[in-house]
Image 1 (spheres, one colour):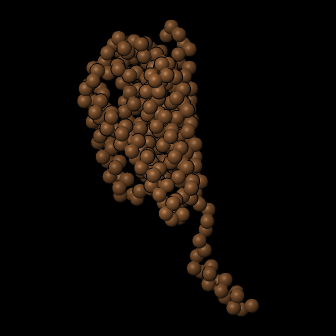
Image 2 (cartoon, rainbow, N blue to C red; image 1 turned 90 degrees about the vertical axis):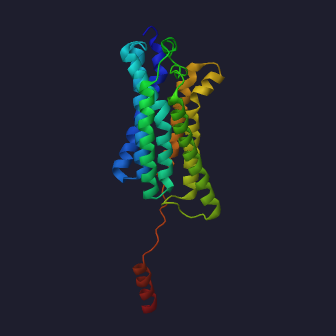
Image 3 (cartoon, one colour; image 1 turned 180 degrees about the vertical axis):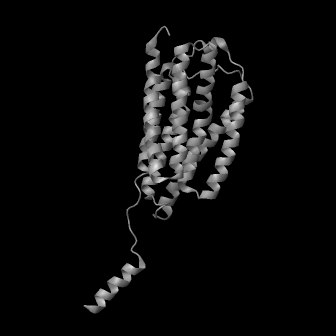
Length: 257
C-alpha cells in the first residue's frame, strides 16, 4: 500500500457499519423482532464487505488474496446487502408466512448470485486501480450482472413499497401498524428509503461528480440516514387499551359510590 490515506474513508465505513450492525443485533436479541434480524444480517454483510475492501488494499488487489477479498467485497456489498435490507423493511409490515416465503426465495437467489460472482472473470488492470473507488467495471460482464440488478432492484422496490404503504396507512386510518405509530413508521421508512437509495447510487454519484473517492463518503452518509430510520422504528405506540376487567372494576366503583 503506497498511499495509506486511501484506506481512511473505507475504514470509517467499517466503524459505522460495525457499530450499526452490533446495535441492531442487540435489539434483535432483546426484542426478537424479525425485521431486526434481517437488518442485522444486511448490516453485517456491509461490515464484512468493507472489511474485505480494506484487506484487499492492504494485501494488494491483484494478488491471489486480493482477488478473493474483492469477490467477498462485491458479493456482500454490491450484490446481497440491498436485497436483505429490503426484506427487513417488508418484515416491518408483513405477517410471518409471507416473510418466510420471501426469505426462502431470497436465500435461493442469493446462493445463485454468489456462485455467479465466484466464477465471473476479473479485469486485473481495473482491479489494480480500485483504491478509493467502488470497483465498477472490474468484473467482466456476464450472468452475474443480471443477478445483481435483480437483487438490488428487489431491495429498493421493497423499501420503497413499505414506505408508500406506511404513508397510505397514515392517510387512510391514523391507526397503529404492527404496534407502530403510523407517523413514526412513515418517517422511519422515508429515512430508510433515502439511506438505501444513497447506498445504492453511491458509485453513480461518485462518477457523476467526477471524484470516485467520494464513494465511501456517500456510503457513510447513506448508512447514517438509514440507521436514523431504524432508530425510529423502535418508537412504538405506548397507548394502552384497558382490559375488559378494568372497565368492569371501574363500573362497580361508580355504582357503589
